[in-house]
Each structure stands twice: as C-alpha cells, then as structure tokens.
Image 1 (cartoon, helix red, strand yellow):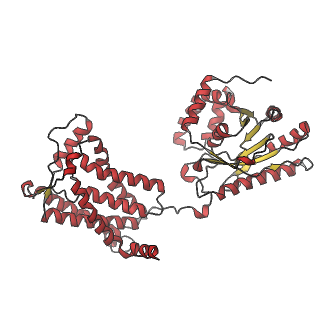
Image 2: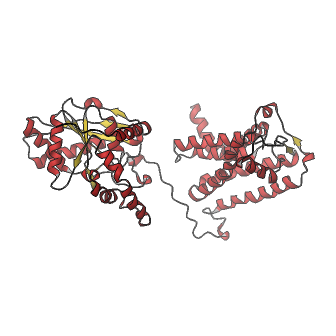
Image 3: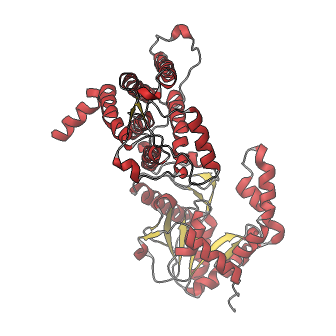
Length: 478
C-alpha cells in the first residue's frame, strides 16, 4: 500500500509546533525494544500526542480518535469530549470553537502519523491498519485512558487495545511488547519504563487485566520517582486542580481569611488585631501633606551625585514606576485576605520605613532638581509623566519610600514558603526594575536609592529580629 502524501501546509504547521512547543527530553529510551512494540502512555491533554509525534524515536504511528478525521463528526466529538464540562455561561463559545477547528482538525489528523481509532464496527479497520504498521516494523503509540479514576497519576485504561497483541501473534508468531510511557509536561520529559511482554498461552481476559495493571503501575512509579511536580490529568480541568505526583508533599493551599463577624469593637481580639496596622496609613498621609505642602522647596537640601548625570531620562521606566502602586496595593490586599502573618510583617515594615523617612523629611528636608525642563520626546508616557510631576512635588525624596516599600514587599515574598521559585524570581525582577525606575524617570537621585538600603535593614531587624534571623544565624554557624 502506498504511503499517503503529506500536505505542505501540515509540514509548515508541524515545524512551527516543534519550534514553539517545549522541547522534551527522552528518559529511558534504551528500554525501547528494537522490534515493533506498543508504547502506552498517559494522555496529558494535548501534550501526550504532540510530544509523541515529535519525539518518539524511530518510525511510529499514533492512535487518535477517528471522529477527528471526518468532517461531519469533528464538531460534535470535539465539543462532547473536550469542552462539554465547561461552565454553562461559556458553552456557546466552545460550541462555536468546535465548529471553527474542523478544517485544522482534518488537516492535522489526516496528515500526521496517525491511525484512526473507532469504538463501533469500524474498530476492525483500526486493528487491520495497526497490524499492517506493526508488520512493517513501526512502533505504535496509544493513550488508552478513560474517565474512570485509577489513581492521581493516571486514569483507568480501556483494555481492548491488548487484543492487538493476540492478533499480532496469530499473524507473526511473535509476542508483542508493551512499553509504559509517562508524559511529564512540567518536567518537559518523556519517561519510558520496563516493557511488559504479551503471554500468548494465557486467557485474553487475564492478559488484559495483567498488562493494563502493570502499565499503570509502572507509569505511576515513574511519576512518583521524579522531583515534585504537577501531573497533567486526563480530564480537561483547570490547571489549579492538577494533582502533584506525590500529594503528601504538595505545598499547602492558603484559605481566605474569614472576616465574618468583624466589627470595630473586636479590633483587640487576636483574630482581628492585625487590622489596626492599617492605621499606619493615616499617619503617612498626614505627614505626606505636611512635607509636601508646608515645607517650602528653598528650605530643602538638593540631592545630587555624579551618577545622576550619567542616567538619562527614559519614559519607558514609567511602566515600572507606576506599577509600584499596583505592587503595593496588590501585596497588601493579598496578604490581608490570605496571609495574616505576611500582612503583619509587611505592614510593620512599611510603618518603620514611613516613620523614619518622615522624620528625615521634617528634620532634614530634601529635594531633587533632576526633572527635565522639556521632555526629549512627546508620547503617551511623557504626557503621563508630566501629569505625575504636576501633583507629586520634588521635595521629601531622601530616602526613597518607593524603594523602601518595594524591598519590604520583596522581603516578605522571599520568606513565603508557599510562593514558588518562579514567582519569587518574577517578584525580584520587578522590584529591581522599580528601584531603578525612580532614577530614570527623574523622581529620585541615586543617593535616595542608596539611602533606602540602611532604612530597609533597620526595618528588617525590627520586624523580624531574632524570631527569624536568630535561628538562621545559629543554623549557619553550627
């Protein structure tokens, strides 16, 4: 039988998918036998089939839903299998989407290395084509999970695929091998496990149970042997519901703080006492009014250093400068409703920096004369910068509270054991950019930034003290 011609458009799409999709490592590929075999894996949504198509060694074919290869069946099947569990309010969109993907589905599934799988009388066609490919020396990759739960790693397998081994034995006299495959998108890896060989002399019902159980157990074992990560399950659920490969080691989930029953009369109760810390903002706004309106600029000491002359005005940094307001508000809001201890520490840190900075502004008033008289460019960002200049005076600048608050938020975030490494890196990057931005938008001198560092060190010591740093110093000196 002649091989089908592959569409040029499909080749282009496949190349783009390979270029932009995660690059998978193959672990245990040496366990794949040289002879034809069945590779049986967890589906992992679209990740399993895509990774199998791109990275399975040697000549191979993948079982796929036959309905996705016939124009009149694609839309109904796609909606029923992929999106029927979505919220009712959005189902109209997914019904529309199921019709829009028809041309793409036909192009991809009819040109890829696929074998159509059916669950009606056309199943004989599936087995006939599969046997032909095996006899040619190809490997077959199948994802036989169904919606019946087995464990948190893999759903139960539909067992009829094992019958292919009996047919293959009758045709060739050879016992077919089944190789377990664990698809781990978060680890960007395909793990191959120990093969299971078909026993021709055993009853087929017994072999279905034995082989499926062995394959599911081996996939589970491989998953649990890896570092802690999320498993992409067979059902199409929200990412926040993805299980961990070792649930007992999963990070704790934060529950929202219950403020029901709160009233001002209960502020002294331990449960609500942290709310009083919000009073620090009353002090801040009062002092801000005094320093901004009652201290004339001529009484303020200009803050300037040679580095300021080297730093050009750049309105792009306004994005990070303005982003600071969202950073502060968002951090306080999140910790207030989800992390009371984090809120206490952050608010105390802010209060310490507020009090010390305001004392500096009153006892030793400061200003900066760095703002450009004329912007080098005219655009939306410079217009917004001019608006900020109009109400935010150039007095009360050393030390920079923009920097101090940002470093306080970073301090709390880095100590949060429930905040992932990626988010901590993102937070660190954003805080650094905020600290730099105050110089590039000419709101602060570099000296203001440096002056904020000892202020933050003082706040760190006063807020955390021996409760946090003492045990750590003792640990490192032991």
